[in-house]
Image 1 (cartoon, rainbow, N blue to C red):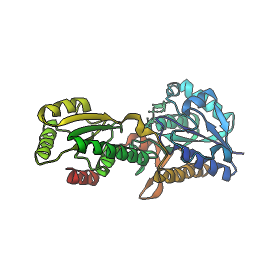
Image 2 (cartoon, helix red, strand yellow; image 1 turned 180 degrees about the horizontal axis):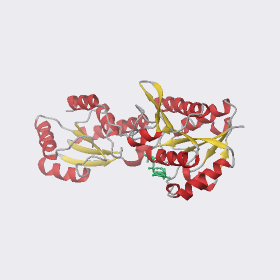
Image 3 (tube, protein in one colour; image 1 turned 60 degrees about the vertical axis):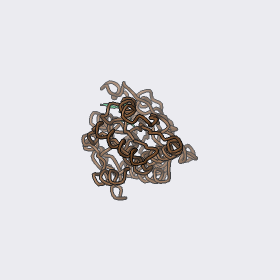
Image 4 (cartoon, rainbow, N blue to C red; image 1 turned 45 degrees about the horizontal axis):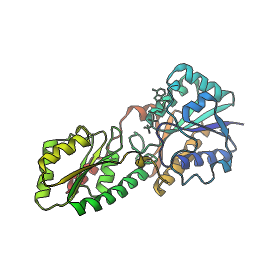
Length: 323
Ligand code: ATP
């Protein structure tokens, strides 16, 4: 009987559980033995495999984080580590592996595929949305909704106290979270790494908005923006806008948690099933994703190499309505 294994790797993202559940059930429905691997690549090396049945994924579709657990695994970066991992797969006759994670995880996946002939399909799951080959990654929608709700709350206090808030959000080198959540929560400015930030211009614009009667302002700052960090930005602005109280909020890890939104669950269900179907069709070395609502595949090499960028029209629209 053929066997497949499923793991979650790298940073956790809401919807990973929904993807695991979908992949397990797709495998079981095709009469394949399915193993869950705990702690990502660390579990592959430590031989931490769990035989999965339909019940082992009950009631996890609505849970954030990953019940299979995740890890950053240094050993998997070595040839010896990957050889041990491949041995553990082969002794169970596992020919196909579903890797749910980000581009770092896909780099490791491609290596074990090339070195040991393991068929691997990647499922993009990261709140950052920074993976080429899919319109959205699993976890992004939940994260932007979390950010939007947090900013709505901060806006209440900003408006009551004549304050300017700088809010730093996650996203690593990409500005997707800042752009989408910043637009949705009506921020006065959105700073993303895909665009150059001119601090002098920013300060004069905020000054101008304030002098035209704007009581409260929120500036959304992507963590990867080149402005020098939210705290420095706040100091520079404070000097220029003397009668405004300037505050900084770093949203941090709350952006990573929470029950996945409907959009993330649906995406995870579709991609989890698609990943297993690809493996069973004998297709490996690819990532599954969606483009214009359709499931598509991209070679892992291309997904790793190419950079995903926010849509230019999205950026234009954001700047048109920020005020
Ligand atoms: P996220 O973007 O959400 O953090 P990620 O998948 O990019 O997720 P990483 O920490 O970059 O997260 O990678 C996860 C794991 O993948 C690493 O801990 C390591 O085990 C493996 N990995 C990453 N890069 C490589 C590489 N170049 N060679 C082999 N394995 C790698």
